[in-house]
Length: 235
Image (tube, rainbow, N blue to C red; front, side, top):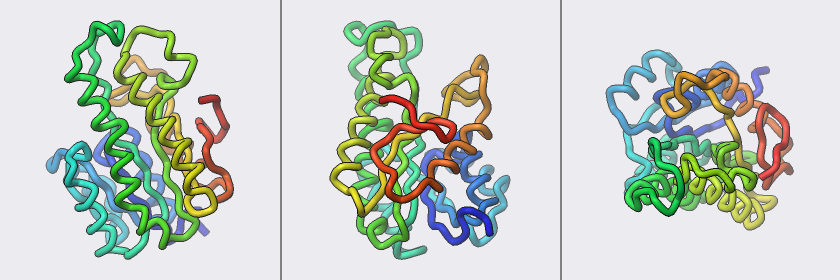
């Protein structure tokens, strides 16, 4: 039997890159997917490409909008009444050539935090009732190796690093609070060729998707860890 047969999964940032390939693999493994992305046209193309039939539905929404979590929660309730996996994948890296947190734009920091931290925070809260009604429910926060403790000494992509470091902290807080109820973990998809990762990245999103599948099929008791390619890595 496929590894995710009947599992109800919400994926943000589903229209491209890691989100798209994760949705493709999860569908192949039997999951039912609700995919969220900001750009309606790109989302429609992704829906056609994924061709998931009745097991795939999509919702165009900007996760940084404060009203979006309630919209998504309603969509989950109407479709399933419960949720098994919240895959917080949508993210931005908008630092450009900025080096140093003290010299960059405050607006860029706010925009980075809105998508990379506040959106997963709000979605986790809004979808908690659905998750608690799910089967061995899980939250996966897509973080980055650029946001671990060791990387905090580096000066490039400062707001991206800080936002992912904060997301790791949110992961740990939720994992402790929801222990035994919802398994919460962080996921490093690796440096892969996406709009965010750029053309120089050594990896590809299909590799990230395989790592995501390994994570969501770990024993339910596993929580509060940081994972890459099926192996635990340090925060």
